Image (cartoon, rainbow, N blue to C red; front, side):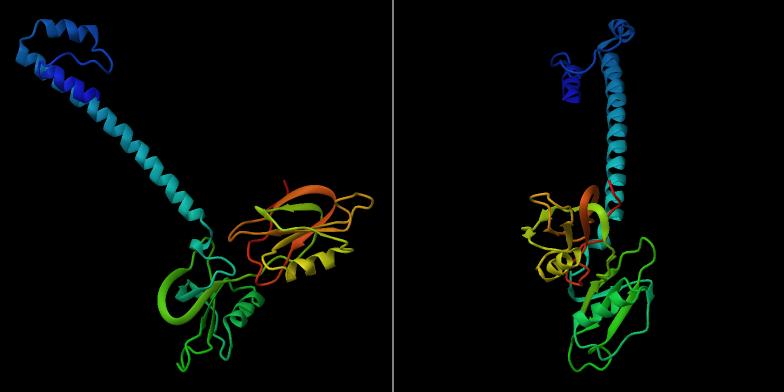
Length: 258
């Protein structure tokens, strides 16, 4: 708008009504100039103003691009997570362990990956009657910060490891984005974990071990974890928490205590 108003002023169609006023020294010099010279002076001032705006916008866009680049680098596993099966997609990684033959299902291949500490991703051949693919299980390794490259390939299924830290946390409550209905009358942390394991969607749990505390004692609080979400730890007396530690649970190990 400022540029448009200045353009009107240059053409003699009225003074610029917006934007900062010209310095008094410029106005004084302008009064002693002929009309063509005044137009040249205004054009020079206008070009300087537009250049400053362009530089400012360029810096702003550059910062925005850098921020978006950081966000992409921090995205969990390029959109892939535990339990997220990619059909007709091969996960290509920088490292690969020897393939395993005779693996009868994608779940069995995932279980093999979970059992191998060096495995972070896997690919299974579901296409029938193809000697080099059928019932093959490829276990993949990822370097630090590496994401699997997804390449279209018919007849295979790929996924991420669901290996989890199964230790229990005494005096810690696990917080997640979604909670499931709690169970009452649960008399141990082991029973609470087993209940979470058998509950569809349950990935984390907290059990109330405190005595004589209505609403907490012998209650099992089951929680969901979204793909890539980490359960947050909060210090709380009288509770024990942990993860379901089943391949179908999803999510990620809990973050450190708050």
